[in-house]
Each structure stands twice: as C-alpha cells, then as structure tokens.
Image (cartoon, rainbow, N blue to C red; front, side, top):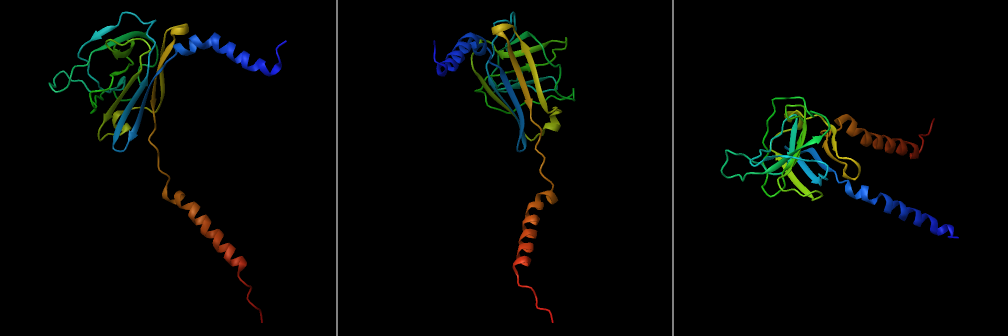
Length: 220
C-alpha cells in the first residue's frame, strides 16, 4: 500500500500527464491597449495554434491601421511610402467573436512605430460578417509573437475605443485557441478635496492630542 504522504504528489503528476497536451496546445495572443502619456500604445504578445485554420488569404502589402473593427500590434506598412517596407500577412478565417470594439466607424489612424516587430492582430468584421486573424505570412503554429504600435498625441477617446476585454476563439480540443483584446480605461485622478482628506485627518488628530495633553487652566 502506498503511504498517504505520497498519494497527493502522484495524483498531481498523473493529472498533469493527462491534461498536459491540451494545456500546452493553448497559447493565446493578447493585445493590450492603454494610454501612455500623450500617446496610445498597443502591446501584443503570445502565439497562435493555427492547426484547425485552413486556406488563409494572403496579402503582401498589408497596412497597419486602427479602426473600430480592426487593430494590430507591430510596424506601420504603407504602400505609398517608399521608406516603409511592405508587410506580408495571412488573413485566417474560421474564428468567432465580436464584430466591433469601438463606437466610431470613421476612425482610421496609422501608428508611428519601428519596423522590427511582428505585424499581427484582428479584423473583427471584414465587411461580410467574418472575423479574421492576422498573422505574418510564413507564421508557424505556436511561434512566439511580439509587437508594439504607438499612436502619437492621441487619447483613447480620440480613437473611439470602448474599454473592456474582447475575445475571439477558434479550433477544437487540443487545437482550441483564442485572441484577447484588452482595452484599459484611462485612470481618473482623485479629486483634490478627496486627496487632501488624509492630511486634514492627521492634522485634526494631532490638534486633539495636543489639547488633551496640555494642562487645564486654573479656575478662580
């Protein structure tokens, strides 16, 4: 009989062996959008399991733009700018999720960023009710991705982005995966009267303590 002190480690090991393939296969992409001083930044990382996605559409001159239905991390790419290298991507269909994450269909902002990052992101609606996963042209399933887009001299309200978490999913079983967009709300500074309350409270305590410790006046 196996001593009880060994049972828990063995059970944990057995469960890890059973569920490890599905755990290892899940490798979500996360894009975080937040205010950074006078700019808005989009920071992306993670990897994608594309084994259940087939027949992507190829685009050899893809433009990184932000609207209320598409967002990307990575370099800017403009076909009319000879100083910017073309960016080739695959557009993968077969994913499900929200068709928008903003409130202004007229937004079209181009980021200012370097050209060394990967270009990847999401198109929530391609105009035909389909969501598309945007990945580098020769992307291999499970390969790590990293990229940043910076939108200078703008705030989240200018871009029409709704704070919250938006998720797209695809695949089944061990090939199930997801893309998560996190739009962080702009921190609201505390009103000045509230910010001064702790200081006023400390001063009142000191005055009360000083009054309590001072000798009482003699009465005639």
